[in-house]
Image (cartoon, rainbow, N blue to C red; front, side):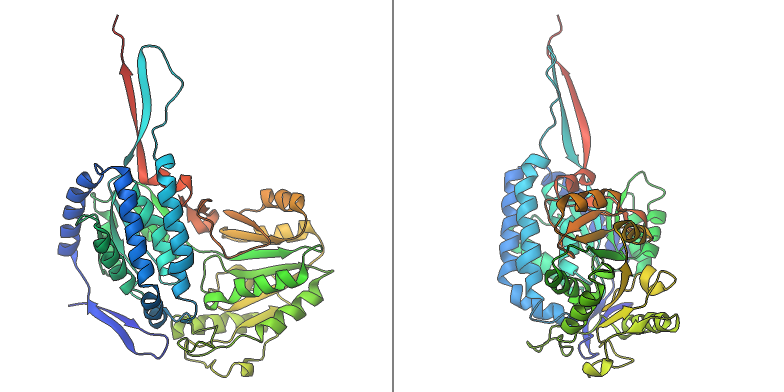
Length: 464
């Protein structure tokens, strides 16, 4: 029997091991989901909202436990992991639950004498969600809670690195009184995950992962007339204009680059700084980076944990070495971070200068604690460089000029434009991307669109 095995980046131990499920389990789960969904969509929305809030209460009650468990699974410092539930997760559940009546309300066109006309938003049916490990609750909740609020059933396949997140969802939904079969999870191989999403009983797929994975999802659903929401990563840029608040920009961009060891699809991976601020910005950025503490993430003094696995850290080391060979210069002495060792997931943060777009470190996703900083002479040069990417998830502008930010933002090829903030998700706004970042949207009122299908009612009330 094939097994799921989670190796903890903390110490290399086996943290979770259990059997993978198979095609028979997929069939049973989808059979139950189809049946349960028919009943669930008849539950009044107000009752669905109450269950979602009870679910949230159950998750919050276990936030500390969940946080420590998460640290062992993927390495983020234990001082930070409970915040995934207490802040972003909580905010998204509350916002989307409160928004649901407006987002799911009937659309009524102008009155026409003798007719009653409206558009109802019916649930699509069964939603399959394939979630990643880097923000395992924040990425998955974006699809799970809106799908359930809309009257769908959900089958979750979580990452093998963070499988216990699925268990936590199940426990909390059970405590909240969610009917059996409305939410289920499966531990599957890549091959069986493709079988799940290709099954005709799955009506929508929400996938967060690599570009390669996104293509696999599209291929798997190609024989059905359904769509998939695909969030496939990024190479997110920041531009520090000449009028930026220097200290504020430094503080926030260091955090945006290195939080979660840089393992964020919307983390800052490349920074363009106007020549008037360049030297001061780089000096401040390096000084603050040197204050980070890399080590065992269970230590409360540590604010930079290991990467998810040694192979991921080795990839980042190789990309950095390649940039140096091409002329880049490293500004952080790895000896300042004694826990950083080759062949382990522990990797020191790094700042690269003398970089350009001939280097993969500035054009290909790094997904680690390394950032390149380039000097630019103008807004036009920064704009050209920001758009010189296969990705387009977020881009941030650091300036005191709102008009300039809006003008530049209109020209940036990205899903979200930030001004004076980064690496953030506002549930009132759609989370979306362009180019190889994918398609579709989660959260906001638009996040319900792909989880429902329009049904028109055209009722003649006068026959004479």
